[in-house]
Image (cartoon, rainbow, N blue to C red; front, side):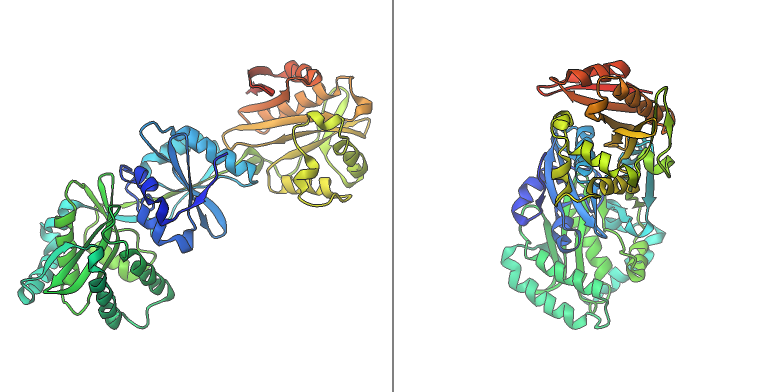
Length: 467
């Protein structure tokens, strides 16, 4: 399984390999956003199936960007990687800031999913020509401000900023902070702090940095990034004392650095009323949605309690505290469980106590990660059947084990078939799958009785049953 690495400046070239041609059009799909907001999002990345996969943190939870494919990238395989990675970590996959062009794909992928589209997350996206020319009646206000600015500072000009401009940029920040409102909130102060760090990267090939000068004085600056056909504006600051500087600089920057771009993304408004008013005044072509997909599994959607299932000879129901001694004996039988494929003891992460395995089963169901059925013969616990590894795409894995004293009587086959039928026709799964070691002839027989074999590798035979 690929390992995630924290995003650093040293990763810039590798990340830009994906971002430079990405046409998702959202600010999150850019190197600048990942670097600038590292203290908040803690982004980490990996490459899989020819795609870039980024994991962020939001409110203590993991959220993943939609995969960005390279020339030979497989988006479906990358999404499967995210899902498998989350399942192995005991989490549900959350795909966030999904561009509209990929939303339909995820709607088709997940049978049950919560989808949100938060207004304050949306990016303000403009036609480059609109900002470059400000034509039409709706831009009369901007043109008036520009005319007033040009009348007072006719020789102001724009040019690229490079590493050699570091002293000039430092002086700009001093001038800017002298005008910066002292009452600004903590979020604005943090944004300014990160903006200063990012401008130290002016001149790097990853970014487009530019400034407007009044003679030798820097009066406005911007750091942007080309991603596909969009120019993403990460930072845009100007000295308020220069009346009309903002629309003048917006227009000049679009003309100087927006060539070959169809769109200019000036990012979201972060729920700031002043920013919202300002961004709307420039006439965005669209407020680009950022969908958040939170897939659910069938246990979350349909089940409040483990039901009781009846077969010809058996009853299957939820584990109870009275089952703990027999359940512990089953789980701790090393000879019996050498084919189980999971180390129950190692999975505890601590010492084995009387309630350890029972509590794990209870917790897994409470989180809707698994349903453990006790297999009973005449009311007596003789084994368990577990439906787990819900993939959020309509599938789940099924396992069954019977206590040694009751083996060889077909109870495993009977219990396995009952839970598989329940999963498909009551829980509304589309697929139940299982695997067994190639040397385990008893399990091969049990699985073959109710499922069809659909593959193998060096270790396992794989089986499935479809609805």
